[in-house]
Image 1 (cartoon, helix red, strand yellow):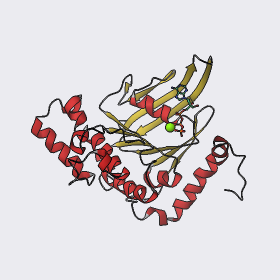
Image 2: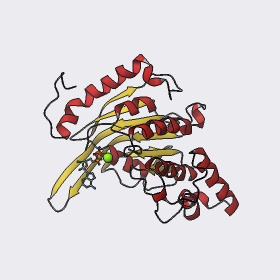
Image 3: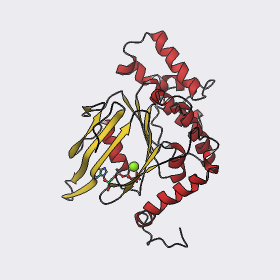
Image 4: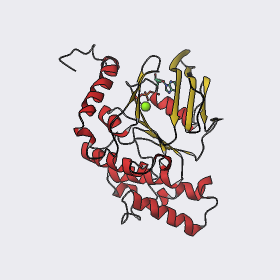
Length: 283
Ligand SMILES: Nc1ncnc2c1ncn2[C@@H]1O[C@H](COP(=O)(O)OP(=O)(O)OP(=O)(O)O)[C@@H](O)[C@H]1O
Ligand SMILES: [Mg+2]
């Protein structure tokens, strides 16, 4: 492995995670010997069969969980706890139902470190900026139950961004949305991440998905994991030019890359859902 360069934002070194279940006395090796360098401004997608350790990896980068052995460095420092520098977003919105859009987006600024040095007016301006960025102006005073699933996920994204993290950790954030809303939010995410901006202005993003096409559309590199135990099977570089929103799917490389990634996980994915080994006809 090469020495870390200035552009290395995250470094996973031989990360292993096992879980002990006292009730059964059994140990699950969720992630084994995972090593990966992620560069500043990179968009990484992680795909792999259910149970291969994707969320476990993300939780360890978030500092919500610790590796059993190995370590994860951010900017050369070992990650030991959660921090506002890493924003996490899950599939299920995790909005506070009793708070309006404005209050949900501003939550971290009111209660956490990101807003400590801001005046009330600066916080308000920041919240308004991110609400506009995700296209929710006009819905500021609505409650989550008055919003569609896509709008709720925009609120969650605005809240994440308002806290000013430099790493976005996204665990199937579009997984619960219908297909069309999902396509729209994929394009929005690329815009917000900074697809048309210089690399140094982009956030570093790690995005888990089960949707291989989504991974190929979004990522600079796709980390394909295999299961039992969770390992990196292959890291696939997505050599499709940016900006991609709107065009990438018509690029002949798109289908080739999707097929290649699917070929890497097909058999395990079938087994994970209780089916037999795939055949060519079923693929
Ligand atoms: N807190 C825990 N205690 C015990 N086992 C766990 C715990 N968290 C995860 N595991 C186990 O670790 C393995 C990896 O789980 P993880 O949630 O990371 O998979 P995943 O790839 O995110 O799956 P999915 O695609 O279904 O979300 C699984 O076998 C899971 O049962
Ligand atoms: Mg998961």
